[in-house]
Length: 434
Image 1 (cartoon, rainbow, N blue to C red):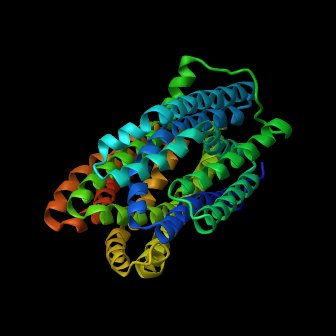
Image 2: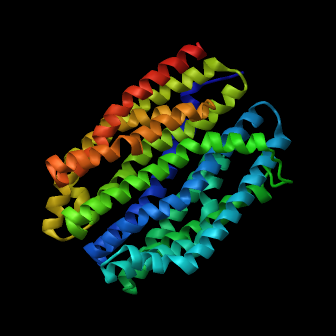
């Protein structure tokens, strides 16, 4: 078998990096348009609602990642019928869940926002923004899953093109809705949802009209497979949940010590972080189906070849991104606001936050590797530690000593401690493979 690990690494990692960068870019563009055209309070409303939106997407990530591992393992071992059955079951499950989110959004988002947020203008903005996502849920949730399945079917370039198109549509609609028509915060969500809905249609097309290994078929499922899907996807699920819970706690603390501006600054930091961190995540995520495929085929030499290339690539990206964020903070922040006081405060916060990239690359790399090797327990422990169990105590301890600066440095402190746990699990795993 002709195996060229560097060529495969480039073929799968780079398209996925570009693809995911564009996905992150259109969320970042929303934040830029909102900050420039509507203002700090609207940014604050986005910051308050985004963690709850991400929680609703957490289950989708769990099914997408968990089912991808199970599908890739079966394709690697030649069990194509089972792979198609799991693929069909996963799509059906997500669609049913998205319909429940749709109904929940119609009836409950507005009263919940009014109950949780004292500032009535902020509550209205938050409920309008969130309700648009809820209304589009049945159309947009499948988009994120199909991206995974296209890569399993050796269509990384097509997946990349779909995501670039979605990002382009979102930017154009943001401009039309907010700049030309002068619409409010809800239009940022509307632009994103229209783009993602088109992405779902384009993502489905190859599975319906193309000659891919995965096809819609009768659902194949049993309790063992369901357990494995949940087990394999639990790390991503709890990562999203725990990250969202941390942001909710940080927002509550920031409202108390820094007001709406503090929440808006955190939203800007996370908008920049989502774009930068997505490069590391997407590189590891792009290689993950390959690692699973070769692991399922018992080609451990190929697995380790991909392991070291991903390790080196992740480390280099971490250093490069940290340098860009540290030295280019002024330019980045200026895209989000024209308020000089807000820019100055955000720049200081971003510089304090930036060392996280010296640690986070290793956490992302280790989690991706464990998930690909069907070892989600290791990934789960690391994710929970890095995103919830360590950040929450650090958040309250560091903020009590350093005030608002303690909030910005908390993610770095948590990741630095979690690295040692990841090192321990990686050493054990590599030893067992060798």
